[in-house]
Amino acid sequence: MESLWLFAVVAGPLLLIGVIIYAFRRNKGGSAANVARAERGAREVRDEIAREEEQEGTR
Image 1: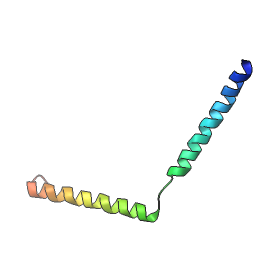
Image 2 (image 1 turned 180 degrees about the vertical axis):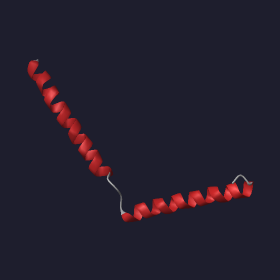
Image 3 (image 1 turned 180 degrees about the horizontal axis):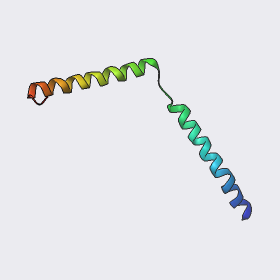
Image 4 (image 1 turned 90 degrees about the vertical axis):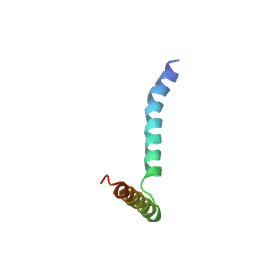
């Protein structure tokens, strides 16, 4: 039973570190095309909100 506990104490943190590193590397950045598309979409939404506020006279 002690060997199982020792395995859990040693392997658990190592496995957790491995998963964190994997997730970080997988989610790091994006392609230039994806970033540009996201920026363009955000700009369009901001412009649309500004137009709607100007039409309503709240800005």
